[in-house]
Length: 187
Figure 1 (cartoon, rainbow, N blue to C red):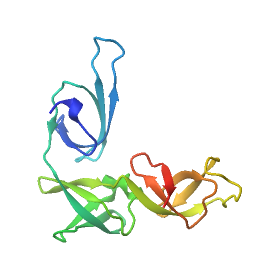
Figure 2 (cartoon, rainbow, N blue to C red; figure 1 turned 60 degrees about the vertical axis):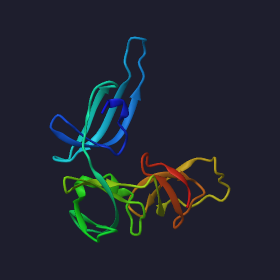
Figure 3 (cartoon, rainbow, N blue to C red; figure 1 turned 60 degrees about the horizontal axis):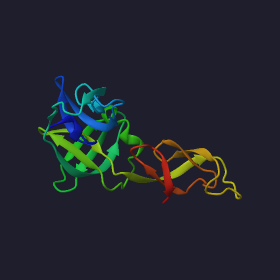
Figure 4 (cartoon, one colour; figure 1 turned 30 degrees about the vertical axis):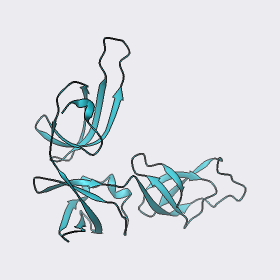
């Protein structure tokens, strides 16, 4: 497959490593003779490290075949989290270090979680594009604040800290974009 066909969520093999692609950034050439560059950011499976490399659009990249299975979050302990396949009830245990970024968005009853599985091995968890979380800690709400007013930091039920409008208070539920970590709206 050509590098210009890479998308978020794909799994590729490069430099002897298996990588789950988290983001692809396109950099257009500044001159006519330049070629478009594709900056790939991801995480290697073994060892769990960040991966970043830039490819030219016509470079060939090896893609790993994988399947997505809908899973449900069961519980988390000190060093691992357990997920269950919704079809077969098979349980998958993942090291918390391998899904540290995703854990900020995972709460009980979250729908739309998918496990990425290749060669009978769970590569990671794919989140839905938005999640609903409750505000557990923030400054008091301002009654005169409008939707276009300033923002304030708020701690959500999973420990994630985001910027929210001043009119929101503790206990309210908000929608959060899982790609950028930004506040979207009230839930």
